[in-house]
Image (cartoon, rainbow, N blue to C red; front, top):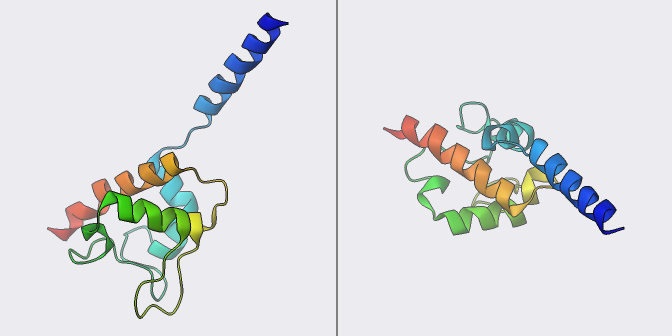
Length: 110
């Protein structure tokens, strides 16, 4: 019985690792529709990640909170849904997508 449980646990861990998404994949599946491939915002009110005074000027803690719980920028006609509308997004995935956003779009600020 213990061997079966251990094998099941190992298979579960291996399967979870195999389906883990990169920050880019998370961005492309949960964020790109509103924020765009260029990070400048594809719909009215979506944050522009290339703006030096925009959302990426905030701390990682604040931004992960916005990703996980949703956020409405002052003056924006619509709110970002919690987890980018992906109910299954984990906090680690939110952190990975934020890292991708910073690595990809902060370079365009310069």
